[in-house]
Length: 587
Picture (spheres, rainbow, N blue to C red):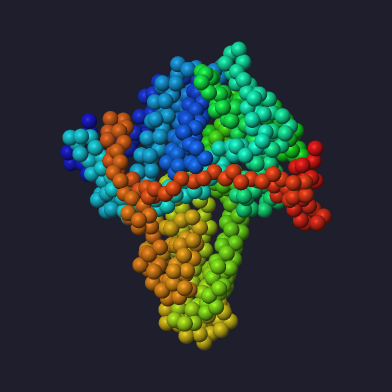
């Protein structure tokens, strides 16, 4: 028991935080061989994923999508614990059903602890005075009660929508093979051997049809140029390898989930392959060299030394010096390009990410201009310089009807996958805010020069000057300067549509926070409790209000010989998309 006398609620919360940070170490599973615990944990995760998705029809509920996201976060935390705590013995990895009870406990711990980390993160980022008001400890019930600011609630609600809509893309949530004629033929090959292990045969027809489905889906969500150079390979080569992995893993899971009414070996829920064999198989299915394929696969192997990595970004786990475990749902169940960008951002490839951000921000400028060009009374300018050392003006609007000047900083941020990630963006947003403040001060004191630099006209009448940050996939955070609002691109366009392009009314709506999600309209606040490490943690949970389930896309058409190839390859000579018959359709 804690001695609560003469201690503040904040001090008690910090002591409890230290206790929960180490509570998982008491689980006896973490004293066993690392390779065996890793294997068993991956199996527990994948079988749980299959159970969640098996209960879904052709329409996947938002609850199911949210549950799969929770499972991923739990797996990521459990894998970090295993590498931190388990001794590394050089013994053969072995699936042991007797260990499952302890592993289930470990997995439950990981999910709860991850949620508690989010709660503590939200609370810790407040200033000292606010933190003291947002936590209270009841020593009679060992309950720590948290509350959060409104803006954190808004951010968290938006995050959960992003995680469901952007990261857990429904078309990647399960193999969309129901539309393929070859599925019934493939299912006929699925059997169990005399040891109860699943076996199947993949014909050329099944492979080609399935690969085309995966390429089509990947292409639908591909936003970056395929010739974008990464670390020894291009984005196109990465996506081609990913398409083969998607095909392999989705067919494997289809085989696993198709076996009904018998006791099957749960280890078959994942794929275990030697590194060299996996690379060679991919080389056979693509025109990519072994050296390049091995570089891509190496990028996808989980690196426990990198504390910032995530199992969703590196979904292949080394079990020993030769064998790798591939988690199917972490291949076909995620957006490849998004995971790649997240990995680049969080690891040692900041220069690549900064170049990407610059490109994406330029695309944001173009997108905004295309959508606002219909309002003929608006003057639009982009990327205009101010005197050194001031930053450039990213985006400028002028409304001749109400004499309003609008100056915005543009910030592109990748869609968030966790509360930690959306809150860690404060540094990026803070830079945008500080730049907006400097530009605003200059514009107020030098109106004519600002107009001249923006529109090459210095005599435009100005009654109102407004500055803000326009972001992609974020709206801001609680402790940043609220005098400079942060609004996402979609919300800004929506306001222009609501007010028929009236810039003054748009600015007024932004100042009033009309673009922010509203409690009991866009999201609800519900009380939630977690029991962990002998304490109860009570906190408000911000949930997007329920919406209809998301339908899986089954309308994938059969690719004809003269159609553009689904992989998106461009001919070097014509600079046009390659035809299917001359690309992936070559026998």
